[in-house]
Image (cartoon, rainbow, N blue to C red; front, top):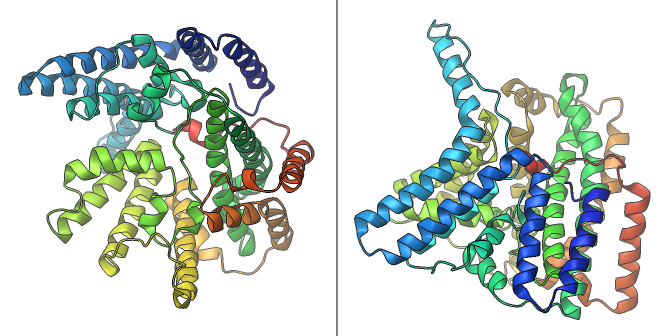
Length: 473
């Protein structure tokens, strides 16, 4: 059930009407949301509801057992059950065919010809998100940072909450479970913020991202037919597409949740204005990068133990972060690329990011240069991320400077025409330090912006409902 479909619109309006009508009973609201979440997920493929339920049941009872036990060996065994269950589900459905293909290719290089043994497994939508979400619950209980929830239905809602189930943000139990356990308040401020997030999120998805897809997809599909400026625009189009697509989903998810009184974590904080790789990962897919930091990088040792160990920890974290995105070598290489950027930047400039890099006027040209340089590195990373093969990466890098091409300027104009609304909105957000800054503008100006966005959606939205990019992860 795509957010950008009339099916979801009808589904949400029905659920929201029932939700508001049952506002006197938090328990009834929670049961309604749980049923709605399972219907929402089952709409993709009902066969995978069992996997969602399995993760839920295992981690609910493991969490309770962890809390009751003081025996270190038993606690480690219980945590192992949770981690192995979740990673086992994720590994089998997402990575079995990938590793089987890779092993067969390696054996072929050694002169062996094994029979193919891939299973053609269908990837359950959102599996990378909800397995990480529920696994963090048991890890936090094991660490003594969290107490288990008493209600299995409340925990099931935490795992399956439909606004963020299939593409995040990857919520923490410490944030979402208390909101599930208490009555929700829906005030005027919450509704105003929700309407902005939903409208802006839809605009970023169906106008900006989907229009960018119409540029990027043909160029990547038939890259040998393009050269020079055409390749540059194709890569810039994907750079804008993946941001508009994924941050658009996150905004819609946050807005829908706000309408029901829930506050989801912010998943994007203007990532293309980052000044270095560390800053980028504090702004891009924040729920994943913070998860990897807390449950992988820090347990590996973090920045303790000297420079070499820190570089190793960064490399391992980003390699696994790349692999999280998909069962393909380009994602592994993309993770290694970002790990290398993090290591090199940390070696060249180990100082932490200043909270306000613009405070010193004399440093502003340097900050602008750092932003531009990091943006170039990010775009190159998206080439690795999007490419189907190493030869495609080589072709792009080797031919982007070869002239304009027959349609270069036309493509550039189209790219700018549909991308430029990001500029004034994000400059306002950056300048104010407030992602909801538009909601604080004078009412006439705010209504004019809302009207323009709505008209833009009606006039320029791609009529075919395109799936969100991160659904495949």
